[in-house]
Length: 208
Image (cartoon, rainbow, N blue to C red):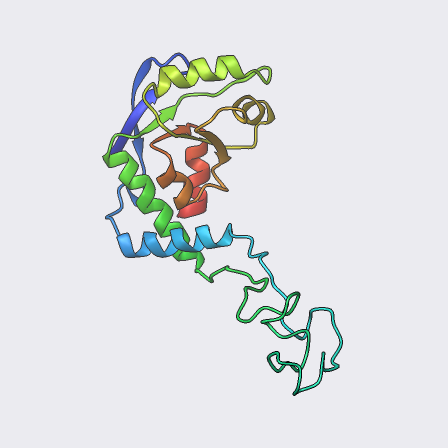
């Protein structure tokens, strides 16, 4: 049975909590995780770069000057690629980088990423997360006590808590997301993962 440290907001250890082996004790599968992560990264690309071809740039179809006798190169249109203001050859065009990845692959990749964090001792369970007001300083103090050496930390909550999101949004290297939204890329990017206890049943409901 996979286990993780159970801590409170003061950083004190309350013991260990048992985790579901079907989610937190999955054998590594680098190929599957790579496929899911690349798809997630491509989905974040905007793909807005665009250039105009000679059929889209402004300019007439009339021959700019006569074919012979000018001493210059022969041109048929001012929209040609070699002309100033002409169209671009083989330039980028607006496109979507999204890849079709099945839901099962995404779920298994998330399980593999969570299992890797458990095996590396980089996942902790927070007994409860309470923010009466959106204040950054208390949240910083809490994170320093729970994961003092974290380069990047991910906090996974059960539900969307506005005060928690507002308290953490200005912190560099700290991200907050719900159990229904977390993915393999979020987990692998973070060096430490903090799971709020009420997020565990939401993950089991989603992944099992």
